[in-house]
Image 1 (cartoon, one colour):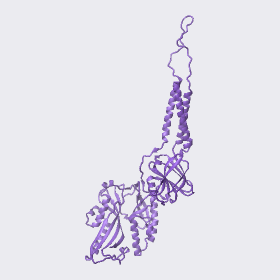
Image 2 (cartoon, rainbow, N blue to C red; image 1 turned 90 degrees about the vertical axis):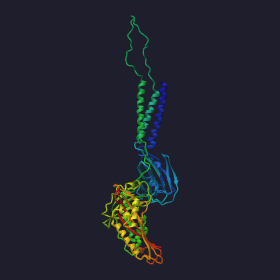
Image 3 (cartoon, helix red, strand yellow; image 1 turned 180 degrees about the vertical axis):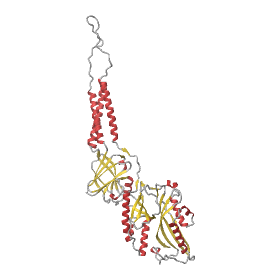
Image 4 (cartoon, rainbow, N blue to C red; image 1 turned 180 degrees about the horizontal axis):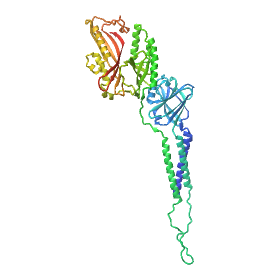
Amino acid sequence: MRVIRRIFGVLLALIGLIVAVVGVAAAFWLIGPDNTVQSGEQQLSSKGLAIASTPDLLNRHGPVLHVDVRSTKNQPVFVGVARDFDVSSYLKDIAHTKLVQVQYPIALSTQDQKGTAGPLAAPDTLDWWVAKANGTGTQSIAWPIEDGPYDVVIMSADGKTAPDVQVDLGIEIPKAFIMSLVILAAGIILLAVGILLVLFRRRSRLEPPQNTSYFPPDGTPAPSQHQPGPPQQSGAQTGGGAVRRVLTVGLAFGLVTGCTAIPQPDTVKALTRPAIGDAAAVAVIKHYNVVNNKANSTRNRNLIATIEGGDLVRESQAGYTIDQAAKAKPDAAFTYTNSVIGAPQFGGYPMRFVSSSGISDNKAYRHLGVWERVSAGSPWMLRFAAGVKTTVKLPDLIGLRPAGKADNTKLAAAPQAAATALATYLTAGAKSPKAAVFVPNTDITGLIADLAKTRAGQASTPKAVRSVTDVFTAPQGAPTFMTKAGTAIMFVTLTHEHTLLVANNYNFSWAAPPMTAFSPATAKYESALTSTTLHDVVLLIPPKGKIQVASLDSQLVDAGGY
């Protein structure tokens, strides 16, 4: 038993020594009183425009990430954390460097990614960072790591020059220093118990011989000196039980408390976020107000293209052409005010949000706009605009989400079918069967009546005109959103092609504005006269019942012939 006890004591002492050394190293070399594991300052540089980590480096959540960055060239630097899909879109096709491995506290491993030389939008101007710091000197962030794929990005503040920086990364684990001290204490206890077991020796007892009797002179045996009683346990057995209890409790405590400091692995594989925050959206609209008024005052086609996109910028530029041909005065300045924002959740690009705003110079209407950002580094652009009468009840934009295929069966008509039905209705005229699908609307009936009148006038000389047609088409995939009430709100721009086919031996020309802004009266066409008008329509598609046309705005964008 003595040999076994000593062997066990030696093993226990060795284990205690190892645990104590680990505790000392963790507490006073690796972690420290601030509970932070530091990488040590490392120099990083890139041939591209950014240094970005991969999601695998932040695949556990809970601890606080510390990043300290300073330029080696005394230039302003930027450091930020963002969702991986934002960073991937921002750096797509741009040369940059990937931070692929962090070996605490020794080295950072990187990998160059090929791409173009940029430039990139200045990172501090973008609204999707979850943590950021920007400026000269050392820039620092402290971010509690969240569940999901996130990246750290280091750049020059201007987004145009390659970064060359000193970086110090740290992971702050709550109570890690205390846990290290607990491990150290547990190691010391194990070491002490092991030494005691090795050095402990059982004491020997001096007892009278049990088989010897003493007879006094008279020959009567003397009374026995041994008194009956309960059996006595050895000191070694009693001490061993106490040691085992202390050891078991200590190990259990160490394991339990040590595990609480271990960050939990990520469970979220894909992230989403609102397209934009309310404050940022209001800032976007204010910026639009300033640039739009400046562009309108000078009819600057290039300037308006910096804030509008899609069919809308074509409409604005066509309006400039018409006004310049008519020598009209520029529009008076106006602004969109008191905006209500509907920002759906997205997990990729493009992203969109909807705004409903008052119009400073027209209290009878509200402005509905659809804003789009094509990529993480591109600006927000107004892609659709319509004026809706304040008497029209619009659904609440809060809680808006993009409509999906699953919503088609929950609506009175699938959004694409609704847009196509409207195009068919306008093409066929007032007697179209599709008219029954829509709530009666004076804008629609007025447009149909005007078109019929125009066709009748142009066809009044049948010898010169073979036919006059108006054909409306609906685009695929117009922006559509579901509201909390279950009504879909669709923003669709219909293309209207007007064609007059000229009879043989005749020619026609456009003789009056606004068509003459695109085709002068001197231009003669022997085959056909053509014009293109865009109609911006807001459709409200309920779960049941008829579809409501909430708004219809029209803009001639081209005229000519062949």
